[in-house]
Structure formats: structure tokens, C-alpha cells
Image (cartoon, rainbow, N blue to C red):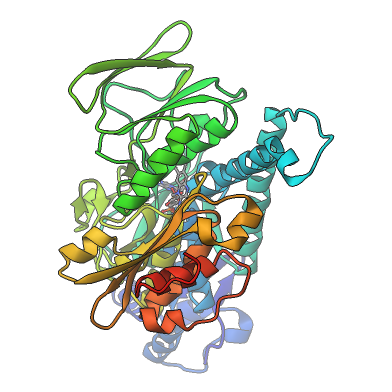
Amino acid sequence: MLTAPVQRPGTEFFLNKKTAKTIKEKDNLTYGSVNNMLPDDMSSTSDDLDDLITTIGTQGIDLLDGPIYDVAIIGGGPAGYTAAIRATEYGLKVALIEQSDKLGGTCLHVGCIPTKALLFNAEIWEHMQHAADFGIEGIGAPTLNWAAVQRRKNAIIAKHANGLDFLMKKHKIARIEGNGRLTGPSQDGVHSVEVTAASGEVSPVKAKNVILATGSEAKMLPGLEAGGRMLTNIEILAIDELPKSLIVIGAGAVGMEFGSLFRSFGAEVTILEFLPRVVPVEDEEISREITRLFKKRGIEVNTGAKVEKAEETETGVKVTFTDTNGKTQVREAEKVLVAVGRAGRTGGIGVEKTRIELDRGFIRVNEAQETAEPGVFAIGDIVAALPQLAHVGAMSGMIAAARIAGKPFRPVRRDRIPACTYTEPQIGSVGLTETQAKEKGYTVKVGKFPFAGNSKATILGNHDGFVKVVAEQKYGEILGVHILGPQATELIAEAVAVLELEGTVEELMFTIHAHPTLAESLLDAYGAAEGMAINA
Ligand SMILES: Cc1cc2nc3c(=O)[nH]c(=O)nc-3n(C[C@H](O)[C@H](O)[C@H](O)COP(=O)(O)OP(=O)(O)OC[C@H]3O[C@@H](n4cnc5c(N)ncnc54)[C@H](O)[C@@H]3O)c2cc1C
């Protein structure tokens, strides 16, 4: 009996039963010629080729084509690398194909991590401005060394990119550098991905399953191109000088975070949003309050603003828009950030040669992340009808890996996804907004508690915002929690667990929260849903 994969010098062979039978039938292969390919310690004990083929077949060995992976993943962002690690944890043999020489994708290089690094600098900077309020004197007027700020951000990225390299080695994931493209449906259960290296060299990667995880890229407004003074997230993160003024087009999480960040560093910031409110996926009360607080910080916020054109001038950029009253308005600034959403990177990856279905450029999947093409999965930002968030991408990767390994999994539930915006103040939310709950037919009760009544918020010197709990009337099940205020992006973790465990207002009202913590504001908000907050 064969007990290990068959090796010929420099190559590993895999012969599945079907391939072996084909060889036998087509090439009239003899027992001797198969046996000659085996290393000495593995020569078969059987004189019968069929038995040998069966034996080899159960070892998953293919004598013809080099390795056949259990999974080939195209894209090494948070969705792809998470799927790769989890798949190897299930014992699968994995190839991870990434076009860049660095793993981590948008999230690590031009998304979550660099923005949050800069936002933390901004937070420290703001504290320094108010040091005297905390009795810290003698530090004079702080100055900002933007180059040093950028260096720190880049060092954080590099550290984590190295960490990913380590994890790939630790989990024995075959990392393949190049641009991957599906060549079509599987042949005899094996998919082929064509990988084009930077040198132009093309090589096939074979796998029983393929996971597409190619992510997304910033959309531009029609007629605009990124570069010069028109920036996307990529260019703005690399600027070598702080702009004195910035126009942000789009007030989703990305636009709001950059607006908040550059305002903290002293830029004049104007936000233009087409929809009637900023952070439009959040509860209406959050949108209203953050608009008020942004304006208080000196940020100009224009909602219902339709951008007509943006032109570079000698000194900056001029943006013309129609305001909510139909009036034409013009604003000028040093730079413009376009943050109007992201498009799925589904072009050039071979989907057109398969049965994969697209929905406005994103891939349709079922709850196991399977596309309409058997054996092909899609995860992360390229998936239709899922929010483009790194933690959603990572979880969808874990689900795909579980499915491929035949292990149990729980599908992504849209109403259990935390959404975090790291503005000043922060937003953390999960579940249904008050309006969504009512639209779904729930009779709701709402508990709202302002951070003004929380002692830890006083200690931090940050009273802005509130916690809002949306629960259904009859059993008190908590349907949504919406937080605007200090550390909201950390506080929301409790609410995610509460929703996941189908917690009720009554249960949470009697759940002890440590004192003094910001989390006590959740306890008060649960109580407020019954008209019984203690601290307000
Ligand atoms: C400014 C900004 C801030 C953000 N902040 C947050 C945040 O705070 N929290 C959060 O949850 N989300 C945040 N996001 C969103 C988050 O970055 C994405 O949801 C996440 O990166 C998606 O992961 P992904 O693996 O699907 O795709 P990506 O991270 O885009 O990775 C895709 C990878 O695939 C590679 N690739 C593409 N095509 C090919 C190909 N044909 N062959 C080989 N490789 C290929 C790319 O090079 C890339 O490395 C932010 C996004 C932006 C732009």
C-alpha cells in the first residue's frame, strides 16, 4: 500500500483514480511504467494495475499535472488570507494567489489600518491641544511632523504584512505571486487558474475548489480621474503634505473618517453628500447628531448636494454642485477626496467563462458563499448584497472554508454585522435601526441614554453622543443598538453578542456592567427602554 504522496525529484505527483484510469485506457500504461515512477520505498505490492491505480487514487495522486490543491484562492486581502488559514486548519491543501508582493489587500495597505492609525494620531493631537484641561502644562504649542506621522503608519502596515507572511509559512500555504484568472468550469472536478506573474510568465494552478477574493476599488465620478488634486483613498493616504483645505465627496464611513481626520489636523473641510443625510446606513438620529457635532467642529456639511463638476485650477480644485434647494454652489479647496463607493473587482478574473451570476458588478452567492459555478466560491468585497467590511470578508472566508471542508458553519446574517465609523465622535452600530424595525412590522420600544450621564465619559472629557437601543415591544428582544460617542467602536462588541444570543431588555437590565465604564451607558440605555435609566 502507498502511505505517502508520491515524489519524483523536484515534483510532487497526484494521481486521482479517474486520471489514472484515463492514462491506462488512453496510453495503454503498464503496471511497470506506473511503478517506475514511484520511489523505491513505495513500489506497489500488487501485480495488478487496477489495484495499484485504486490504491494510488485513494491517496489523491495525479501523475500528470503537478499539485492539485483542495482550494486555490485568488486575492490575499482579509477575505482571502483568512479563508486560506482556516482551510489549512481544516487540513486542506491551499494555494493563495496574490498579484501584489504584499498580502493584506485594501484593508491593510490603503483602508482600515492606515486610516485608523492616522485617526489615532488625530486623537492624540486633539488631546495635546487640550492638555491644560487635564492639568498637563509646559508642553508649549505642539507641532505636527507629518512625515513622522506617515512613517509610523507605514511601519504599522509593514509589521502586519510581515505577520501575514509568517502566518502563510506557519500554515504551509502555497503562496503564488501573480494575477489569477479562472479559465472556465472545472474539468473532471479540477479547476484551472491561470496565473500571470509580473514577468509575464503564465502558469496554471489546479484546484478542486476556487475562492474568488479579489476585493474592490474606489469608484470615481463620471469624467474624473484619480491623480493630481483629485484623490481616492489610495492617493490621500500617501500625501506628503497636509492640505489646508479639503472637499470630501461622499459621506459614508470612508468620507466621514477622512473629513474628521483632516479637520482634527486643522484643514478646512467641506463634505458634499448626494443623499439627504450623512452615514446613510446608520439610524437617522445618529446621522442628525453627527452632522450637528461635525458642524460644531467647523466642518461644512452639505447633504442633498449633487456634484455637477470638479475642475483643477492653478491653486486647487473647484467643485460645482446643486444644493438641496436646487441652487448652484461652488466650493474651492486644495484637494478633493472622492469617496462615493467601491466597485467589485470582477473584471479580468474569468467569471464570464463560467455560470457565475453578477449583480451590478458584484458576485451572487448562496449562504455558503457558493457561486452558481460548482466548486467556485466568492468572499469579501466582491460579493453582492453584503457590506464591504473587512470583518465581513474574513467571516465569509471562514464560511467558504468550512463548506469546502464539509464542516458546519453559520451563514452571515446581515442584521448581526457591526458597522464602525472611527470619526470624532465614533459610531458603532449593529442590527435594525428604529425605522427598519418599524418597516419590518415590529412594535418597538426605544431606550436612549446620553453619554452626558456617564461618569467615565466625564473622566475622559468626552460627553458627546448617546446609546440608542431598539427592542421589540412584546418580549423585549433587542433588535438593534446604535452608539455615537467615545469608544463606540469598542462598545459595540457587547451589543453584537447580545443580538447573536437574542438577549432581551430584561436580561440586559440585570446584567452587571463594571463601574466606572463607558459600557454602563449600555446598561442605562437598556433600562431607558423600560423608562428606567438610573443616570438620566
Ligand atoms: C479608506 C478605507 C477604510 C476602510 N476602513 C475599514 C474599517 O475600518 N473596517 C472595515 O471593516 N473595513 C474597512 N474598509 C473596507 C475594507 O478595506 C474591505 O472591506 C476589505 O479590504 C475587503 O477585503 P477583501 O479581501 O474582500 O478585498 P481586498 O482587501 O481589496 O483584497 C483583495 C486582494 O486581491 C488582490 N487581487 C485582486 N485581483 C487579483 C487577481 N486577479 N489576482 C491576484 N490577486 C488579485 C488585490 O491585490 C488585493 O490584495 C475600508 C476601506 C477603505 C477604502
